[in-house]
Structures are given as C-alpha cells and as structure tokens.
Image 1 (cartoon, rainbow, N blue to C red):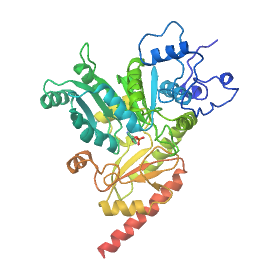
Image 2 (image 1 turned 60 degrees about the horizontal axis):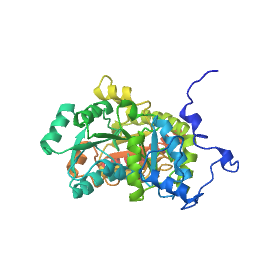
Image 3 (image 1 turned 180 degrees about the vertical axis):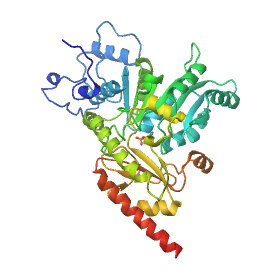
Image 4 (image 1 turned 60 degrees about the vertical axis):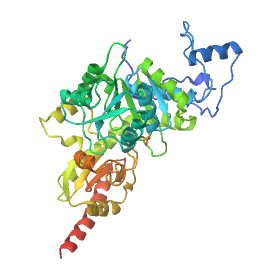
Length: 425
Ligand SMILES: *Cc1c(COP(=O)(O)O)cnc(C)c1O
C-alpha cells in the first residue's frame, strides 16, 4: 500500500477530531463552556501540574481541558489544522491578529532588548512597534526591502550598542505595497544575533500569502504569524489571529497567552474550522482573478504604477526572492492612480461591487486608501520612503466574476477621466 503523506487540504475535515468521541457529530460541536469537569481531584492535580510546567508528561499521558482561557476543544483542533499547513509542530490561536503579534513579541522581547523589523508592516503592528514597545524600554530598528545583511546588522549594533536583539519581525509580502523581504537572509541575521543561551527569534507575518502560498518555516523562520481575520477566516465575519512554530516556542507563547487572556473563543474557532476547509480553493480562485485584473490595470492609462507580485522586474533581486519563497502571486493589488488623493478618492467612491473597507482576503472584493486609512499613523517621511503615496489604492480581490470587477473598475476610471477633462476646460 502506498504511504504518501496526506496533503493539508485532505486533513482539514478530520485532523484532531474523532466523531465517535462526540456523539457521532460529523462536525465538531461548539463547546460553549468556560470550565471543564475533572473526573477526580487526582486528575485535576495532574492537569494543573502540566499546565504550569511543574513536571514533564509521563509516558502516554494526555493533557486534559481545565478552563477555556487555557485551551478548549474548538481552538485545540483549529491549532492542529493550521500547524498542518505550515508543517509546524504546533499552533496557537488568538482573539485577533494584533493579539497574536503583541503576545508573541512580548513573550520573547524583554525590557532592554531590541526588536528588528521590516518596513512597511501592517498599520497596527507599526503603531505597536513605534509607540508601545518603547514604553517598555524596548529598542526598535527598521529595515526595508533590498537592504544588505551587513548594513542591517551594522545599524542594529550602532543604534543600540551592547543590547540584545531578541527578535526579528518580518512581514512579507508587506502591507500595502507587496514589498518582499528575503526570509533566508533575515534568518542569517537571526543566527548572527543568537548566542548559546539566547536565541534571536525570527517571526514572519504570513497574512498576505499564507497558509497556502508561502511557508516561512522552510526558509529558516522560527514563528509564523497570521491575522486569521484575513484569508484564513476569509468571509469578513471573524476577527482572529494565529501563530505556528516549534513545540518549544509555541508552548512559551501559550503560557503568555494564558495570562494576557488573548485566546480565541469557541464560536470564532468553530467558524475558522469551517473556513480552513476551503482556504486553498478560495485562495487559488482569488489569485487567478487577481491575475486577470492586474493585467487589465497594468495597461490602463490612469494607472501610474502597479504593485503586484506578478509584475516584479525580470532578473531583479526581488523576482529571485519571490521565485524562491512564494508559490503564487496572491490576490492583493495596489496601484497608483494618475493624480493624487482627489483622484484616488473619486475612483474609490465610484467603485461599485468592491466594498470600500479595510481588511483583505475575503470572499468579497475590498478597496481602500492606505495613506488615509490603514497606514494613516505611519510618519509622513516613512510614507514617502515606503511608497504609500496619496495616489495609492489597495485592492483585495474576492470571488466575484473577474470580468464583473473589471467592468466596475472601468466605470470608476471613467468618472475620474471625466472629472479630469472638465477640470482642464
Ligand atoms: C490585518 C493585519 C494584521 C492585524 O490583524 P487583526 O486581525 O486585524 O488584529 C496584522 N498583519 C497583517 C499583515 C494584517 O493584514
């Protein structure tokens, strides 16, 4: 009999769940309970000893449920299933992407340490790094795509001599411009800053392409982080976050999660179990549509510049990194419209079918204006440096018919064109 490993999409309907332990229910019921009943005091004692890491597991011993802030069946199954996509030992779910990010960072980065991060990053992450971490005496140093390893190392050592860089936080592709960071290169920097007793942890925000089209652990990342609100949830109806990695790192993060209370609730966990069953077909269909739409945009006279992973310059360094690291061009497109904020607003206000909303990765297409919305809090100098200009529009392509979406884009461009020509007269 052939013993080929099952692919993740084959595991999403079954992994971690045995119907016969749940009255035969084909789908895992929602465990809407805050606490779990022990069979005996002895059992309760065992569970607590394990939960607090007071002793190692005995041979064949299984940890049971105690209280839903620590663990509950819906979140537990979900964690196993996400870990399967990333080929990780373990996963942890959170009440939001920001909860996953803040809990993971504060698990490994302590007062006095330094966090090295790629820019641009998601607006909320950017705020957390620039405005929250410094309050805890954590030094922060940024770098952008294309910078050399030695330049980045030198910047850290010059900015905070003698301090310990305990985490590198990378977002790739970066929000909103799809900028690409070489994960292998950052993993070499993490190794450089690691010592025998203190590891510099490399965390990669995989929200834009994961969990289907990019697997950061294969390129030397230690942790993969997600806003599960986006592609994993995929229906704009849940806010959640996640993290995957080795047993050792994930159990440290879960320890912190217990005391921050940033775990995911049973109902949202159940919704995400449903979502993970279709994540691959959704992401593939969305990426295919995005390809068609990007091709249309690329040749449009009102499009100054397009930021789409399918249009990286051939033979460029970024193209080489993309080919090595990413399995698809994804479904995020940003572009600069000819003109400025006025033209971008006019376009967005007249875009039908697309919803004018932040967030991404959903079944419905979404459109937004990064400079005044998701990235309004990024400093004006950084906005210029990172290409978040007033004319930048970001699209997340959903599951509508791509030609219908193009028709809507065409109509919105027509309105802009008319306004432009009447301004000239
Ligand atoms: C949305 C997003 C986040 C934050 O996630 P929430 O679920 O909104 O808390 C983090 N990183 C990226 C890349 C995102 O797009």
